[in-house]
Length: 386
Image 1: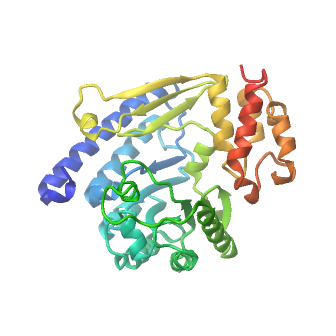
Image 2 (image 1 turned 180 degrees about the horizontal axis):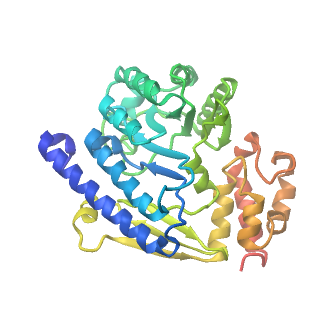
Image 3 (image 1 turned 60 degrees about the vertical axis):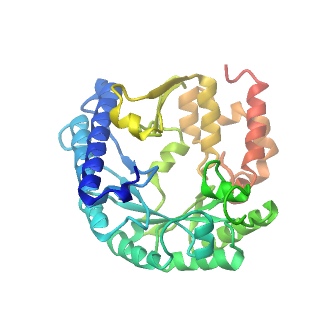
C-alpha cells in the first residue's frame, strides 16, 4: 500500500517497523561477516539510499541513524573508527522537508544527494517525476543552507522535451545553489517504468527522445559546461569541485569503483567481500519489501566470486574512475600488475590513457565500452586469469 494513502499514525507505525527490521538485519549481517575482527573493524563511509530514505521523515531517519551508529560503534570498539569520513543520504525533493534535513545533520550526515533530474517541467513529467518544479528552488536552498558543499545533485541528459539550451539552463540553476557534487547521467530507459510504457505506445502520448547521436552530443555539452564551471570529472558521470582544503568527491562510490569491501542491507541491496587471494563473496537481497519485513528468513542470494570474476569486475568498475583500478591495489589483490594483465589493450589505447597512469582520460571515458571489450577479450585469450 502506498505510504501517501496512509494516515500519519499508520505511516509512522509502518516506517518504524521497517526501520526496526532493517537495523536488526544490519546488525546480524555485520555480526556474521565481521565478528572475527570485532574491535578493529573500521567503516569509513556510510551510504543510505538506493530508494527514498526521505520518506521515513525526521523521526524515522533519526531512529535509523542512531541505531546504525550504535551498531557500528559496538563493532568498531570504544571510541569508534579513527575517522568516519562520509555519511551520505539520498532524498527526493518531494519528501525532503526541513525537519528531515535537520535530523540528518544532527545525526552526522555530511552529504545529502537530491535527485533533481531536470528543472524543466515537461521533461520531469515525461520522465514520471512527481512534484512541481516550483518546489525545487525552495528545497535546494534549504539543503544548501544546512549542508553547504555537501549538497549533491543528480541531473539527466537526453530526456524528452530537452535540448541543449534546456540542459544548460538546468546546469546553470543547479550551480546557483553551490553543490559540491553533480552527477550527470545519460538517460537510460528501464523496462517497467512509465517512460518505457509511453515510448512503446502503451500509455499516454508517445514522448520524443533525441536520436542516439544527438543524445551523446547533448551529454558532452553538459559535461563541458560543468568542467568550465570548475567541476572535475572523476568518473564517467560524476563531477566534483574542491571545497576548502578537500574535494567533494563521493568517497563511498569510489569504494565501489575500486572494488573495495562494502556491506549493504535492505530490499535490493548487495554487499561484496573481497579476500586477499583475489576472490570474493557477494550477497544480494531480494527487492520484495513485504518479504523483507515479514519472512521468517529474509531472502538473500549468495554467490562465490572466483579470481576471474573479481578481476573482470575490478577492470569494469575501476576504469570508470579517473584514478583507474589502482595499480598497487591490483598488484596486491592478484599478484600481477595491470601492465602484465592487459598489455595489448593498454598499448592500443595508449593515447587515451593519462600520462604515466593506467587510467582513462576524460575523452577516453567516452570510449569506455570498446576499451573494456578489448580488455576482456585479452583476458579470455590469455592465461593470466585462471
